[in-house]
Each structure stands twice: as structure tokens, then as C-alpha cells.
Amino acid sequence: MKKTQLTRRNFILTAASGSLGALATTTQAAKPSGNRAGVIVIPQRKVPVLAEADVIVCGGGTGGISAACCAARHGAKVVLLERWPSLGGMATNALVNIWHTSDRKKQVIFGFAQEAIDCAGEFIRRYAEYPKRPETHWFDPEGMRVVFWRMLRDRGVRVICNVTAIESLIVGDRICAVLVDTKTGRKAVSGKVFIDATGDGDVAANAGLPFEFGREGDGRVQGMTMMFELRGVDAAAVRAAPREQAARVLKMMQELRGQGRFPQFNERHAMHYLRAGGNGLYNMCPATGDPLNEEELTRLSAEARGHVYQYLDLWRREMPGFAKAEVPQMGHGIGIRESRRIRGLKTLDGRMVVKAIKQPDAVGHGFWMIDIHDPKGTGYTTHSDQKAELMPPVGESYHIPLGMCLNAKIPNLAVVGRCASSTHEGLASVRLQSHCMVMGQGVGTCAALALNASVDMAKLDVRKLQAQLRKDGVYLEDVPSDRQ
Ligand SMILES: Cc1cc2nc3c(=O)[nH]c(=O)nc-3n(C[C@H](O)[C@H](O)[C@H](O)COP(=O)(O)OP(=O)(O)OC[C@H]3O[C@@H](n4cnc5c(N)ncnc54)[C@H](O)[C@@H]3O)c2cc1C
Image (cartoon, rainbow, N blue to C red; front, side, top):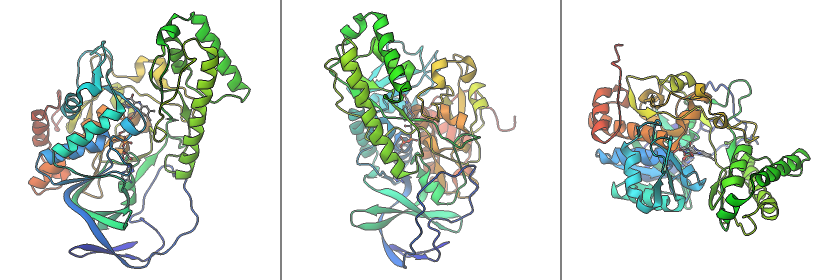
């Protein structure tokens, strides 16, 4: 157990055992693997304070950006910490560029997501089918890095990129600081409320909150994907090619893969690109592994990049329209869909999604299907089947509850985004960026209002929070009374 002593300008850490970060007993359902090559005991040392604020948001993906902007809007002094050099998380750094805001009849996600759409200007476009498909907008990931930065800057959020939150410091039952590694050594960032938006739940797990990992049975998480961009495709030639041509190339890919001479690929997406492909982002290069194992991620990302060039090589030779295709960019890292799911006051499950269940502590709506990419990395996804039993009925949506972001152990720590409390199936729906932004807005606003009222987040009158969210543009309908 670490001892943490607070002084005015710095933290004094005493490492009394070799158990780094183990502040409480956790009850993980399945343990992710990791490197265990012994331990080093760190001697007592002073850690300078890099920043302090009311609200510290760790992670600058769509969940964290939304939380930070919304807390700042309500008067909180906010610092956002991000490990990568630029903002956006999966949206920008893994090239995941589609937003979903419609229940297939009407748009039901507004609030911060709509603000981001409005701020994005020419960097975002609405699909012609709006609002009849859940997918409503696509954007330029490069441009969105700038948009996210401007949104945070304009709301007064202090943003520090290139720092990873590596340790959570607990005094009593409260988190008082996180440690980050910088170019000039280890530093502390202290605050009153912490929001873990790391996608992997790093801060919450290190603070000792219990979490789930992977699906029941084998503990595997959803498959990953290396997104890539193709340019130089002659889209007209692709579309003009006889349909048998695409089928022939797909068959060739399947046969080569069967002989062990070609990598895995998402068959449905590959067929789509071979028939209708053009210049843009391609989502068809799957992988499987442990998102918490850096060395494995290094290998998976490198191998996936090689796989993309294998697709390209074959398509250039075999498929009309692709002869001059090039790959200007791939994801900065391989895209990760699922990691730790921090256990909260409430857990969103697949039934709640499909039955469009409403919640008294709702902070917004979600509607996406239970979209599971095969954890074995074959590229197969439940999305391909479009089975009615995997999604809420057309025109209906479920509630995203605040309780999935709060926990029973550390009252000044919340989580948002894909590490919030859900089952493997629940996460398969709520992991969408638009849904993460709903959570971020709910929790960011809750943190600021709770600080203004000098109460913990779970003690804030949820009806006041909901009233504020509606004023801030959130679509929030059919909220049941908590006495029902
Ligand atoms: C290939 C792929 C396709 C997808 N398709 C879609 C789609 O079409 N539409 C859609 O809406 N969603 C899609 N998703 C899901 C969606 O992109 C993610 O679930 C969503 O972006 C998660 O947002 P987040 O903010 O919770 O986490 P992330 O976007 O992962 O952001 C977390 C941020 O925290 C940072 N971070 C991590 N650890 C630390 C730390 N310790 N300290 C500081 N910073 C840290 C990361 O660098 C990152 O910037 C897809 C996902 C993948 C992988």
C-alpha cells in the first residue's frame, strides 16, 4: 500500500511495498495479461505539482473532450491530460470517422455532439439519408484534431498532451492526484474531481476500482481494427467493373488466406469496397489481442500495417480501378473497441439496449445495436447480420444512466466513454463516440454542479442535473420517476 502525504506544493510518496498502484482489493472477472518481470521499490521522493484544478479529465478522446468542455462551461477550472500528441482518441488517432445520432426516425443525440458538429464546419458532412440511418455524419479526422482543440481552448480548458496518467493517489476514500510522466520527470496533477476518460480505465483501475475485462467464458475483448486510407482509386472504374470481378477477387483473397498466404480481413466490408470502393477510409483489417499489453499492441499494429499492404498489392494487380491506389495514412495506433469496464453503480447490459429501457438517472439517449467484432479477430461482426433482436426498434432508444459512470468506492472519481460500467454486450452499443459524448456531457456537467453545490456527484439532485442538461441542448425524454 502506498502512503501519500499532501504538502502545499508537492506530494511526498512513500513506497512501502512492491505492489505498485494496489490501493484496494479488486475483484476482476478476468485478468488481462501483462508483463510481470519482477518489481522495483522506489525510494521516498518529492513529486512536483504540474497542475491543479477543480476537475481533472484524463484522456482526450470524444468522452473526455465532452466532459472537459461541459465541466468548464459550468464554471469549473478544468485540466485535460492526454497521452498522445493530439486530441480525439479513436476518432482521430485510429481514423474512426463516423458519428451516429439518429434512432432511424429522428436525431436523438444533440447537446455537446451537436455543438461539435456545428463547430466542425467543412470538416464534417451529413449523410444524404439523414435521419433514416443511425450513421448521420462523417468527418475528416485531421480537421477534427483542430476542432477539438479549439472547443477546449474556447471553453478555457487547460490541455496538456504527451502525458500519461500512470498512478492514482488516494487519501482516505478520495482520489487527490494522478502522477504523470513528463520529459522533465514524474509530476503530480491534483484536483477535486477526477474523470477517467482513458478508454482503458487506467486511472480508476489504478485507484483500486473493480472492473470487468472481456466476455464471459474466455475473457476476450472485441476484435481490434487497423483503419487505413486509400487514395488514387478510380471509383468510376470500380463501380463499372462487372460484379463477378469483385466476387472473383474476394474468392482469391479467401483461398490465399486458407493457404496461410494472406491475412485475415472483414469479408463483408471487403466485398463492399471491391464493389463500391472509392477514396476514403477502409475498415477491414482485423486483429485480436490484449489492449493492456504494450508489447502485444506494438506487434499487432506493425503486423496490421503489413496486412494492409498485402491487400493493396493484390487489389492493384487484380481489381479494376485500384491499379494506382496508395495508402497515405493508417491509424496512429490500432483501433481498440474494448478494454477494462469499470464496475459502477449501474451496469448497462444488452437487454437494456435492445428493450430500449429508460432510467431515472438518464443523461441522454443511445440507440446503437449490439455490434460485436469477433474477439478472435476474424473480422466477422454482428453488424453484418443486422438482426432485429440485436438493436432497439426503429424510432426507439435506451437511456444512458449516470450510474454507469459513478462507483461505490471513490465518490470524487467518475469514468466516461468505453470504460464505463457495462457488460460485454452493453458496451458493444454504448461504445459509439456519440454515446461517449453523451456520457461526457452528463458527467462533466454533474462534476461542475456538484462542486458548485459542495456535494459529491452521486449526491447531486439528478433532476437538477437533467434540467441543466436539457438547457444545454441534450435530448432527454421519457425519464421515469425514481419511485416507479
Ligand atoms: C476500428 C473501429 C471502428 C469504430 N467505428 C466506430 C464508428 O463508426 N462510429 C463510432 O461512433 N464509434 C466507432 N468505434 C468506437 C469508438 O471509436 C470508441 O468506442 C470511442 O472513440 C471511445 O471513446 P473514448 O473517449 O471512450 O475513448 P478513446 O477514443 O479511446 O479515447 C481515450 C483517450 O485517452 C487517452 N489515454 C489513454 N490512456 C491514458 C492515460 N493513462 N493517460 C492519459 N491519456 C490516456 C488515449 O490516448 C485517448 O486519446 C469504432 C472503434 C474502432 C476501434
